[in-house]
Length: 275
Image (tube, rainbow, N blue to C red; front, side, top):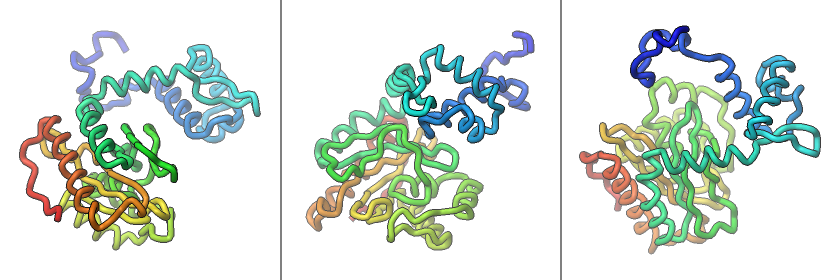
């Protein structure tokens, strides 16, 4: 394809996107994500996980290793992410407007409550934690930044599912949903009813849904056009939740979500019952 065929605004491509896709680049990112999720896998295992030929995986890993984005492990001669990926992560933290807008408010909520605060967005059929603050976490309840998880369970993930396109909701609810705890709801009809309630309030609360002794209060974050672009959650262990602080936690999450939404340019949120 000649340079003349490149649109003036490459961010707004009309027509068949396949005309502009570089297969080698696409496969490289796919392989890197597989390595990130499956560290210490050999060439043969990576070929099986990606569906690529072993010779292609060899050439791609050789190039990625040379560029400093992956490294070989000593244990099995497999591969894992290298230090240079941290540079990309750090740059993303400083460049993504949503993270920039949310960071001071999330830091403040974590400081005031002493609980774990997570900022999540939807990534396909999963939720992705893009910012996490954890003051004290003896039970390891916090989700690290960059972690992918299901949409059908958890405070913030269910909000993202509730406001996702209908096709995404149908795919998630018709797919395999594993119980993360004894209290995890996996019945599609029951989840659908919860999603309808979330759409009415923009909030969600869970107990023992993801962790046996955990709870979460969550609220939707909206962009300038009113669409839900993210969700924030305040999470901790049940021994940190008392009748006295329950209302304060609920109010804190709702207020923080509103402040982030306002910073992003949203002005017309509705009144949400929080008592």
